[in-house]
Length: 242
Ligand code: ATP
Image (tube, rainbow, N blue to C red; front, side, top):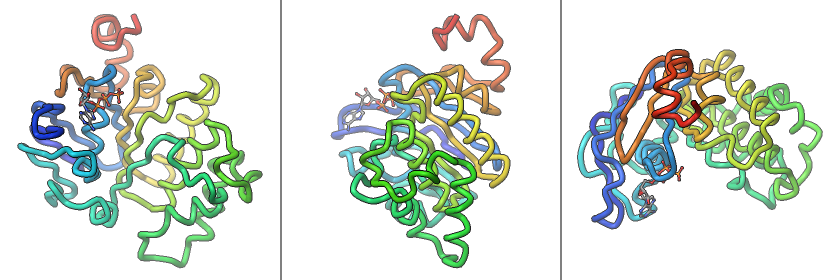
């Protein structure tokens, strides 16, 4: 479904952040993108979602293809219309808008406007905590609740592929598990394909089908999630979770 082939990306024309990055997200699957700080995970997501140029970056080699269509250097709004939605960390929700208004904002690009209300109620089934907070301004939510809202807003866009940037960041461990279980449930019930960038390899691989590990702008290890999780050498050498 999504093919990233040998992509090179630079910032400010000199900083080479991706050095031949490749990955594949098959339809309906969850793929985890792992690696330490600065490995290039966020740059990969920005390259796919068209946000790289907004940060002074550009793709200088390779291709990004989604459902057979080349996406290199296409603007973010067109990429959203093609069915790819990037869920940024929870603190990027609209703080002065209510939970409901944030969810409605997620649906702005949709062509079918008929089921929006029903879909919002479905979000409240996935995230019951948000239902009780539906009229509250997002700025008053906890970090975990904001993260849930960010994911809910992404689902409201009805994407074919959801890109998730560090869903566990700054969230209590128990809540992290809960959020990842909900992500898995959404993948199963909506059929949404997902590419999840995470520093928490254990939790991401526990719901993923396949995983890629990045170092220094490229993939250094990949495999089925259960293999990566259970292989001692991979855990110690690549994931640092021995
Ligand atoms: P993190 O988990 O810390 O976000 P990451 O794996 O997502 O790490 P990136 O943020 O993609 O890594 O960074 C890859 C490289 O690109 C790093 O060397 C980083 O310093 C550099 N970089 C990232 N964003 C910019 C930017 N806006 N301008 C210049 N260099 C950048």
